[in-house]
Length: 129
Image 1 (tube, rainbow, N blue to C red):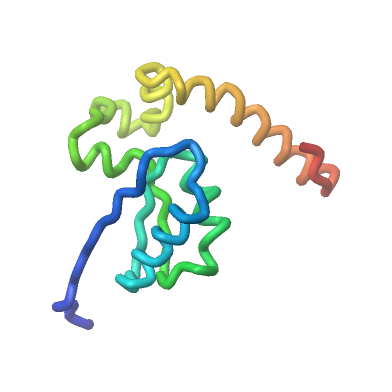
Image 2: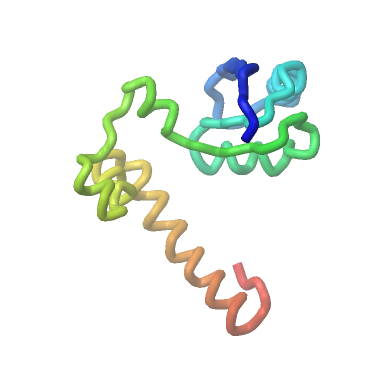
């Protein structure tokens, strides 16, 4: 087995914006590429982080990219996680939808769309949405 003795980490916190400008995006890409991470964790809120990664993944010099949402908030203890028993039964998303109204709206909108899209893909092999 290999020993890893050269572990380094860094962070960059972009400005909080609904949409990043080209200048913001280029700055973030330069920061990442200058660091050359093996693993890049991105927490910008969903779905912004997923859209940003999809648009820029080919420009990023990282071996793996993980969109992790609120994990940074949980680690920094700026947000409380659900009680352990709720996490254990895999319903943390439901707990968070009650404690963060914006998530409830997102789940009520996106989940039915996702189910319909999967049904259409499976049974009609076409994308309807």
